[in-house]
Image 1 (tube, rainbow, N blue to C red):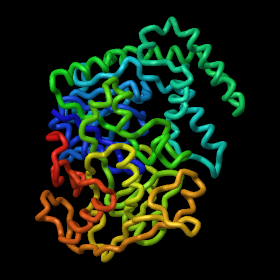
Image 2 (image 1 turned 60 degrees about the horizontal axis):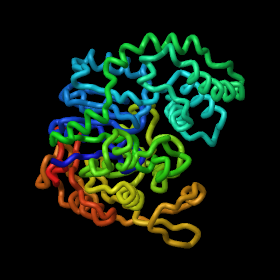
Image 3 (image 1 turned 135 degrees about the horizontal axis):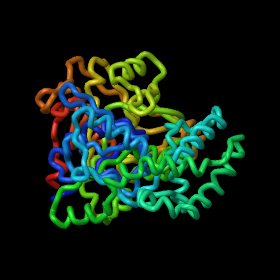
Image 4 (image 1 turned 180 degrees about the vertical axis):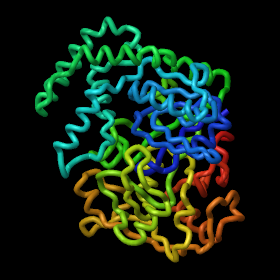
Length: 429
């Protein structure tokens, strides 16, 4: 049976939560493989709304959900999110939720450093969520991290704390802050250790055993390809690799396990925070897209920047992430527009480009080349079949397929689970 890997094909906030939730009804395991609690996945189930930042979206359905080793974990946030979901009636136990023993921890001084850096940069700020994600990944790569498995050995942390504090105390001093309070840190970790360790497992074994038994695994990505630390709009990116290939290294399965790669993209484009955005609209249409699409960040609450669909960027995302098919979301936000623009290329210094340039100054300077297509007046909200879509909406979808060189597998027409048009079943491949 096929596995499915779900990734964002733009700058995040594409509606991955709903799609993963929709697919998880047919999956046996849902696995997060990168990022941290900077993800923002909103699930709407009847009258109930669930907002997840760290837990895999499958947990709401009771599907076995795992956090892989590629995720950085804030243990206090984990406890808060678990308790909140339990309060909403969601059962979370070691039988349906596991955390990789080798996950690095996000610690309080990571959050401090994240905020201190952003405040010091001023106009050049990256636009992080200030949740300590980047500094935690830095410590992982620098071999200084405290990991989930260390919570069972808190009396043996001295050497690791020496490495951590030698690094962070110097950084903090540069910002006029005092050294890390080691005793307070260890005490805080002791308070949360038992809660986290209850779910700690060798997740790579769980997933390999599931695969050997022919179970369907759904890999859930966070953020989007355009925020990938290698392939995104650097330096305005996240601190992990968000492409589908990371599913292997971030969980302990081989690269052949990724299966069908489903890229989630909006029918238009949004971005939160700083960085280039060629098709951004600072006019009434941009305002309309934001209002109709309720474009506010799930994690930060920040207003999202809105613009036309950028086929060049999505084509690039599909290529570098090996996307098999896309799920097109929020088509209904475009209802009522007489004309719709699609970016098909860029102009830069008198030349035409068919890809997004690598350097940030060139990225900021490109001018979009638009193709205008006919809009539609009928509502697409809640459509569950092609027959319920206006002809112009279908033409728009088909044109997107041509431009990004990738077929549409799903079309989402509202936040509700069942308001989805299935074109190609990812689990059937």
